Image 1 (cartoon, protein in one colour):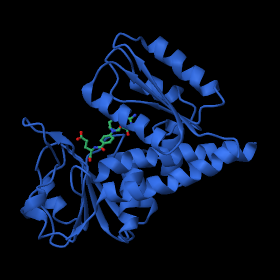
Image 2 (cartoon, rainbow, N blue to C red):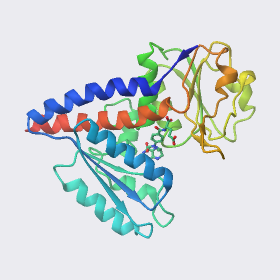
Image 3 (cartoon, rainbow, N blue to C red):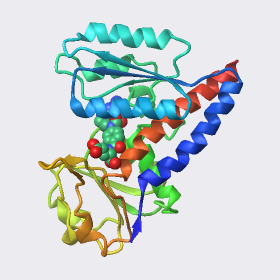
Length: 283
Ligand SMILES: Nc1nc2c(c(=O)[nH]1)N[C@@H](CN(C=O)c1ccc(C(=O)N[C@@H](CCC(=O)O)C(=O)O)cc1)CN2
């Protein structure tokens, strides 16, 4: 079984990003990412700090705006609008989930699509489904880069994505389709889910249930991408797939942790740098 090691690829790409950022700085442009976090969700705090640390590591400017859990939708919209007009800011990201009093959709729509490094805005989602250039959600983007780095061609393959979230399942389906895969999105209401997953050449598990898929649910020789991040009672993190049971059954598989997760933050940096490159061209 070939290990699809996201951390190793992320480390490699980080080095290349460091060089690109250095070149941009010589041209007078420092790529800048602003991450907005509302409330005190412990996982979000870890992810936003990781984004900050990574941005700093590659020489980018970055800012973390932490707002209280009581922040109103109007307050957050005002922050986003101010960032939209700040010409030194290339990428804006609002960490999800948001507290209940804030409508996520209203916030995502308010982000300038040119600075929407998460690729969640309706404009960028529309571009993606039309197979036009635009900003793309980072986890799906990272999955495609990881598969490509391992020479796994998805064209003509039967891809089953289990999970229909706006962050992973839906944008990944569009990316797979754009790369000529035959795509099925499965979800909690799919009839006989495990009979379906067994037909997949490439199975993407994003269901959020630890070890939900075992050897009997996966075709021999399939490629498995595990997007699940399930925190167990002992504090360890595990995926949606039973890695140990599957490792002698599949041809390639991502581990959890160190699979898809590290690629998410790497793609975020990539997109911020691409936007900064356009700023450098404008002079
Ligand atoms: N605005 C956004 N919010 C959220 C996103 C997103 O892409 N944009 N995705 C997730 C959280 N996330 C990034 O924000 C993220 C999740 C996991 C990882 C990661 O590297 N995971 C590690 C394991 C981490 C652990 O031990 O907890 C791994 O898989 O190796 C990075 C980023 C929801 N919100």
